[in-house]
Image 1 (cartoon, rainbow, N blue to C red):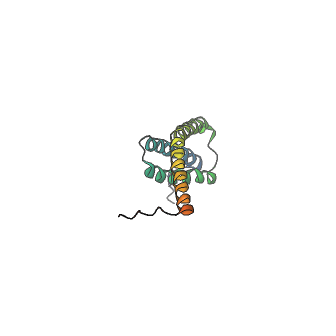
Image 2: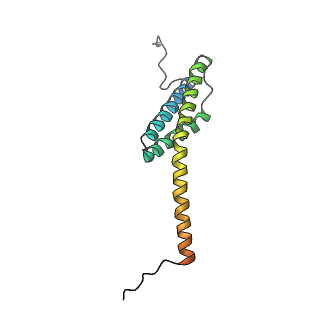
Length: 124
């Protein structure tokens, strides 16, 4: 019989390694969102956020990080949380500004509905 002298390499990393890779991916995506916010690229940021949210959601299906990788996982989590705090600091003023604009627009529309649109004055 011909038996292999070594086991074939797995087609995907071991589950604990996949978990670490997922944390790395999340940290990269959070950094990308921060970079986009710094340059006011809101549409692109929303696109990256979709991938970020999906990556975070997918963590629940992965096993815990292997004990040998816990230090690195904590470092990645810390980096992700730092990105998140900086991102929120950039987004909060923008959200407030948009809220003010929307509130102003709603008040204007409400006044127009209440009092009607101004009628042009006829020329003599």
